Structures are given as C-alpha cells and as structure tokens.
Image 1 (cartoon, rainbow, N blue to C red):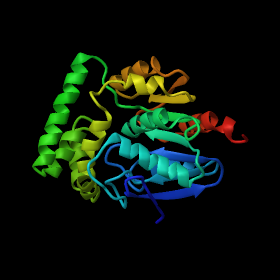
Image 2 (image 1 turned 180 degrees about the vertical axis):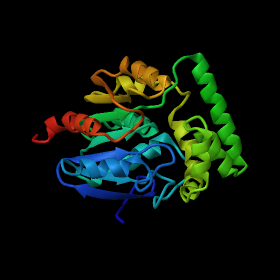
Image 3 (image 1 turned 90 degrees about the vertical axis):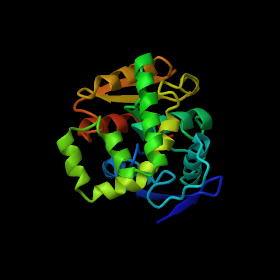
Image 4 (image 1 turned 90 degrees about the horizontal axis):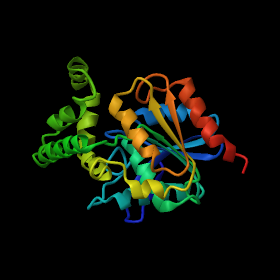
Length: 264
C-alpha cells in the first residue's frame, strides 16, 4: 500500500483507481479508505477520474502523530495532493466535507480548484450548538475512560434505530468502529462549536457543489442552507434519497461539477 509522509512525519496510506484528472475523496467519521462510502464512490467515479482514497490519520494503515490539530489534517491532504501532481479536485463526505472546506480555504485554488461537499454536519441555532457541546463532553468522558464500545453506541444511537445498532454490534464491523472511535475526538475538533466556520467558508474562492439528500434529516437541510450563505461560489443541489446514498444521479452531479476543468 503506498504511503505519503505528511509535514509532521506522519505516514498516510492511500489508494488510487481509474484514469483522468485527480480527485481526492475525504471520508467521514469512523471511516477509512476501506471502511465507509468513499471506496464505493471511488469505483463509480474511476471511469472519469483518477480517484484517490486515503486513511485519515489515526485510521486504517495511517499513523497518528500527537498532538492532533486541524492544521495537521490539512497538511496530510496537501501532502497527498502533492503526490498526485500538485492539484486535485476534492470531494468531502459528512465531517470529511468539513475538513475539505477548511483545506480549500487554507490551501487555495492552485491545490484545490473545485470542491464538492456532501452533507456537512453543522449545527444551526443556539439549542443545536448546546446539544453539540453536550455530545462532545459525553464523548470526551467515554474516550478518557477507554469505554470504546459505549462511545461508538453514543455516537451512532442518533443515526440509526436500536435494532440496526444491535445488528451492527454483533457484526465484525463493530471491532473496526471501536478501533477508529478515538478519532471522533478529531472530528469534534474539526467541527469547532458545531456551527458553520464562516471565515473559512468565505475564503473558499473555488466553485463548490453542496449536496443534501431529499430524505435526509431536517438538521442537514438547515446546515447546508446556512453554509450556502457564506460560500462565494456555490451550487446547492438536493438529490433523491437520503444521506450519502450512492445513486446514478449523485455520480452524475459530481461528474458534471468536476468535468469542465478536465481538458484544462
């Protein structure tokens, strides 16, 4: 498995599929290049792009140099973009889209000429931000006590019904989730106070495709609507289905968004 070395010496594992302009996928919470939606997206997009998936630090085969900082994750992505030619489209999924947003603001259009963000999980309003703060405190306490199973349960309980959670707990995937759960602290750090990072969003000078599923939870619709107000060059698209459902429509939207620069 190829690796790239980030600025602080952390080794970051990645994979490459397809041919065409480079496109990096940044996956969300508890995911890695082999565990999560990114791998499936890579297969579908590989006929149009050279798609790179990678293990964010602390996951899969990547290392986890301490202390964590958002700037270190941006450096990881920059190092990968350097390996693929110095410029790449970036597609972020869930909290991975928050990292992609901060990276686009910090690295600029020379490194990230176009961006797509799928349902960044921002909190809108004081009540939602307070709930986010309480969730973070509960998670921090569970991780400090190394109660990994409980931390996974706490994180996923709002996303799926109890019977689905029980089924997942009995599957081999549960061990992968427990192995990755310490990185939830990184994702909560990425999210700051839970609200839209207005300064970063306003600094993104490239075209942004902002995606949300028609059947997704209302808070996700509120989040993308709030983010739209701060992005200078944004197209908000509501796709059929819910969440990060891999549909022909979604693949077509991504391909059309990134395609105009293919011949440049």
